[in-house]
Length: 271
Image 1 (tube, rainbow, N blue to C red):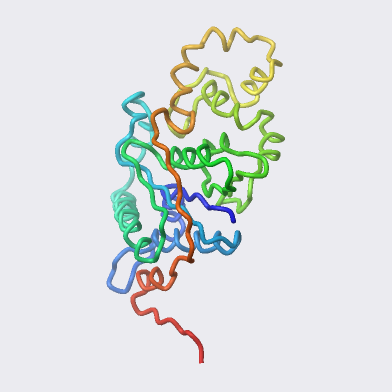
Image 2: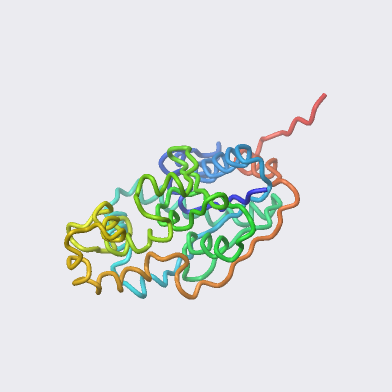
């Protein structure tokens, strides 16, 4: 049975823009939790598994200590948001903070957050330290592409509702998953504000890694960029503890979650 590794922060940000405006009758925001649980229940049904693993970002960031500009553009963009958007984002954070206790009450055995590390570090630790199990990574984060492994690890892309395999990844990007961190070290990552070599995109970096780029000195002369970026993009981040999941014998009790979203929910067990 496959285990589903769920990047909660990734789903929360998606839910913020899809169902984030939902509130209870008393005005309590529940849209983010509703959106996350809706998506999780869909994936549970799709893959017919009890083993749902919830991974949370830490509020502290080791990467920011290593590289102060890490995600700084994102922070600046959020500072410039309207008051309404800031309030909605704060409501999202508060709802995510409620999730662990709510999920425990519903019977979930696999909830993980480690100080200084991001959810995708925990995903990588699980995948790399358990070579016998099969996993589906539930996230739109392209950093996780480096974890794909034929017949064992796939990635469900929530927006596209598509399960990406190693073979499909390699066909599209022309590199192996194990080369993805190196490619991103050269190109940088605009989302995380990691600066790469100017003018170098995925295609040129893939050609260089495959020995097909006509001017390799463009890369070799900037090995300093690679050396700075690679530790930031490689999963898991160096020093991340070993994370191992526990078997989820029973299904999550969805009635507990339904009652949180809708206090007037009444379960109908039959006639």
